[in-house]
Length: 90
Image 1 (cartoon, rainbow, N blue to C red):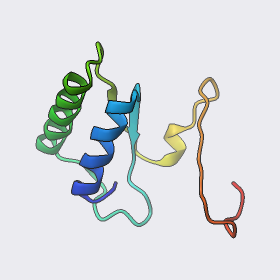
Image 2 (image 1 turned 45 degrees about the horizontal axis):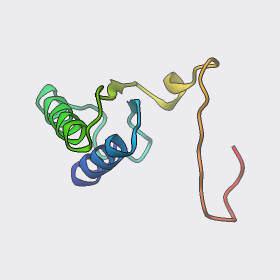
Image 3 (image 1 turned 45 degrees about the vertical axis):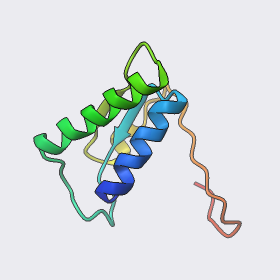
Image 4 (image 1 turned 135 degrees about the vertical axis):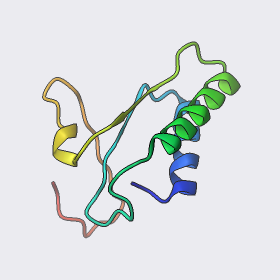
């Protein structure tokens, strides 16, 4: 998970540009490995506020996964981008 201020900003802006679903998972270098129920409610509040602000009809779904492996779904298109030219391809 990102640091709380960064995660909240990313969720707000991604909601405003039309993301339909967020999949959050703890990475190897995440500070926290779990998200509290209180923090999930805060993220839902941020999503709802951003949805209203940009005039969307439907709020994006917030899904918490246990790991990156749980995010892979053969029926879905997953995109990953890294601007560093020295990055090893996945």
